[in-house]
Image (cartoon, rainbow over all chains, first blue to last red; front, side, top):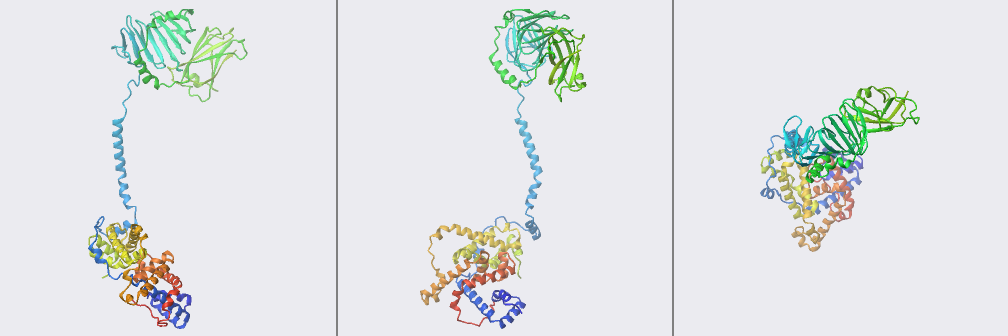
Length: 430
Length: 200
């Protein structure tokens, strides 16, 4: 026997004639015995009747299909459906459309790459004029020629022309020439002079009279002559080269001259002049009037356009480095060198990249800046050293009787372009 | 022979307008009732019903699952009705609610002005009672009592199962019975025990 609660759930469906056969029988049985449910049913009927009655006036009493069919619009995208299965499948897989698009991705990427390559090929900037140049010809008077390294062709040295590595410049009778190299370094050639430019920090003075004003950009500058070499630490000086003798005059700064082939060397102070002869030690420096020596350069004024060009093309791309030809003054630990010095000890920062890659020339002077000896430290010495230090023995036996040692370490760029980070240089006694 | 919705949709897509006519005939009452549920007036509801069928026909190719045509049509109808209401928002705001001429039948007119007024009043109270129902009950109630749709038809149109529709209508009826109790008193005396199942 169904309960009244269960029966109440059937009442509305009963009125709407939506009951199953069994439910109808159960309900009829219950109603025949339960007056309360009969009352409830009556209330439901009344309510339904009220609703039906209230809506009766608003009911749709005629079909609208004719009106619709008479005015049917165009279908948006008419499609022919071949199979309902496919339609349903696509309905259940909404990402289907993207799969078609995904197939086109490799093609699109390829086309993009081709287009981008074409675009870049057209738009890629041409290399700058003078990209490899190291300087500019900034003044010329009279006839001066430029000779390429590997040819004998002589071309006139034009003002504003770029100076390249490996070029030679030669001046004729009554002519002067000025080159400005990166640094900035000014090189002035008097008549009948010839200079070879190996790089912006290394030149070869072959003959004639040349005035150089070296820019202090932190890198070592070397000028070689037939009779010896000049190591420059930022300075202005004059060189006059004959086949037999080279006369070097220092206007300011600090240079060191060294004659070939015995490596005899000497340091110059401003206002001093020295002669270098093949196979001989440099002469004792003598005081001279520098203004008189450089008198011939007074009329040389750099061409304005050439200087502008130099600043724009050459000087801008140079970055000043911090390293330099180092000079180290050594005072022995015990104040005076009471015991003979047998070796020089070099200590460097652990983990330096230098060992095995760079070499140094070591010049040693006494307290009066008179040269004592010169030696060369090669990469293997650095590489084989232990505890980040090495000792260089004094070549001709221990030195005694000096109060102070000036030790100058000059990197040898022919071996490597990097430099050591020295932490200490010490004299070692017997 | 009765075609499934999906078959009729497929034939429509192939250009058979008669198939669409069959779909219109099948769903016109439900669509009209839905439109009426939104706008509450006969003429506008009929316009919306037609517009809905036009919109459905235009967008038929976008229907993803043809088996769900009824449910989709209900959404189209809701959108169309919402658009209609938005379009006529200004006009409706300033319109004085008048009893429609259609609701005053000749018989009512003969019985005097008060009789028609009473019917109108009763309709408004029924409307208010339906509006007081939870939202998910309202549309099934309107579909059932306005157009006398069977539970199956309602289920197909609103996308629910037949049992859900039956439960919904049962609960809605109980609430309506309480809300409309005093209104039903008018008819309480007549035909007391002569209850019998309504038959279609």
